[in-house]
Length: 202
Image (spheres, helix red, strand yellow):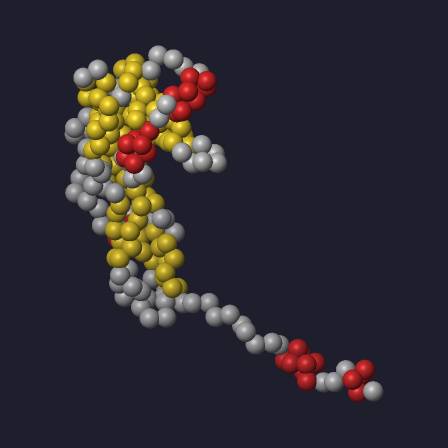
């Protein structure tokens, strides 16, 4: 489940690209907290601690601003095109008991039958879960699956309280026989390789 990281935020009252660049040079990341019909809160967050906190998908943060806690889910991360550093965060305010929609990774357990090949069609899936208890991933078991089998959305193991936002018969993965590469040449190619050329015959 997602950890809840607490960060101290400073209210931001200077906007524009120049102000954002200056903040980043000072080790701060601009962010906006929004949701529940409230006015957006623009803040600056400590760059190092924030970067570590958002390495995990669907990170849950508690932002302390002027002594008030704002529990928020990371909804969007803007990164520098070349450096891939965090440039800006969009944070959605959430409350205990509230359900939100998130995308999570599909974790595969087990091995398919000998000689079969497994292909994951959905590396991530969307689900609805309690905002303060979000799973990091969901699991599907492929142990012993044979060529020709399909792994369906209904086969995914969901944590308690989570609802998968896919039809139960959606094919999550397929199991097939391996494709054998033809390493031998054609009969015509083999014949020409064996026959001497006119130049060599002379």
